[in-house]
Structures are given as C-alpha cells and as structure tokens.
Length: 70
Image 1 (cartoon, rainbow, N blue to C red):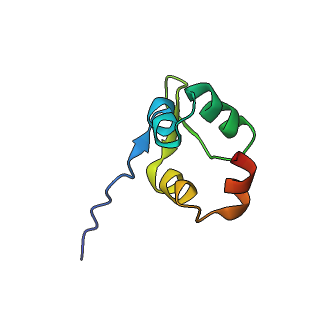
Image 2: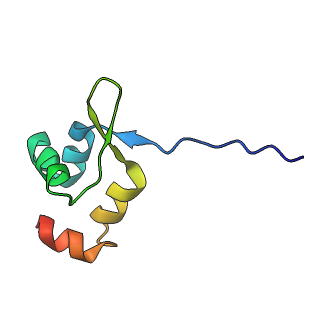
Image 3: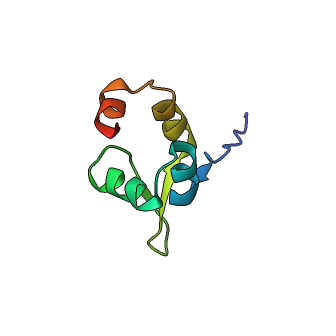
C-alpha cells in the first residue's frame, strides 16, 4: 500500500499578503470580509491566506476578483 505524504499548503499572514500587493494589512482583511480573497482562521482567530490563491490573484489569473480589488 502506497503511503501519501501530504504537504500542507503554505499560508500567509495579512502583513505578508499586504506586502505582496503593496497595500495596508487592513485592506487585505477588508478583501477577505468582502469575499474577494478566502481566509482561513487559525485556532486563535487570526486570518491566514493560501499562498497559491494569493499568487494567482497577484498574477491576474483570477481576473474577475482582480478587477474588483483594483
């Protein structure tokens, strides 16, 4: 039987996402609240963002959402 090793997807903090987009971290939180970016909540209630989704958004691979952010 083959065992699968599942690598967890890297998660980014609001500050890391804000740096990538050159915006304030509060803006990233607003995007999450508006549904423009999906957030994962930690056990402590902090938001984290999937790196793959953030990079796709940054590269314009999600045009409908990207247009809403600009």
